[in-house]
Image (cartoon, one colour):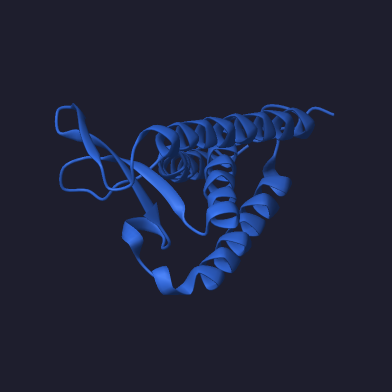
Length: 158
């Protein structure tokens, strides 16, 4: 059934899930490569001050709340449930699958690390910013894209 906002809900779900799986897969592949080739704590200059490192982060962004791993996991799961609930109501909205897929895939990539390793592998370390990984980048871009999509929907309601 064609949604009135730009596409079918089924297509939106398919695209979101496909992007989430791709994002999580790329994240896990890059982290596995770093864990197998970079000794924890080592640092190599990639370009323009961006370093390749191997850091295990038990907290969230910037290593915050490292002592509350179980609580963080529960809060992440709640946030994902809210995101999925919102998407379920608006899956036919044009391009909403992009931020949804990026955030789901990024969260899944980091949750896989937490479940398997007890910590998230971070490996990109720019100057004046803590180390991060592809999952973190996907979540950040996803949040920004969601804000843009919500703003666009507010300005141009269906």
